[in-house]
Image (cartoon, rainbow, N blue to C red; front, side, top):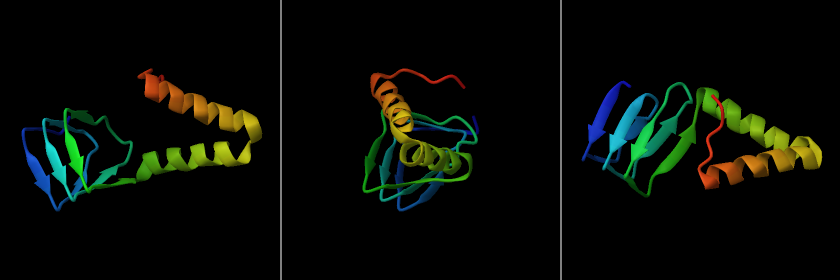
Length: 95
């Protein structure tokens, strides 16, 4: 982890989340970027009028998942739907 942030307010900022930890933080009008390059911890944080952007490896993963969903028929759609159901249930994927 690069930086631990606790009980901080972030406002009108662009933040690269990779490798950082945020506990009890408030984000207002921030542009949040995640690249999939390192773990991020977001614990008991709140977000108000923020935008999220996936970059680097995370963007490639999202694009790959879109391709599976839209380009590989019912099997691809099922795979992505099952993945989101696992996320909703809190089941972790193998790293």
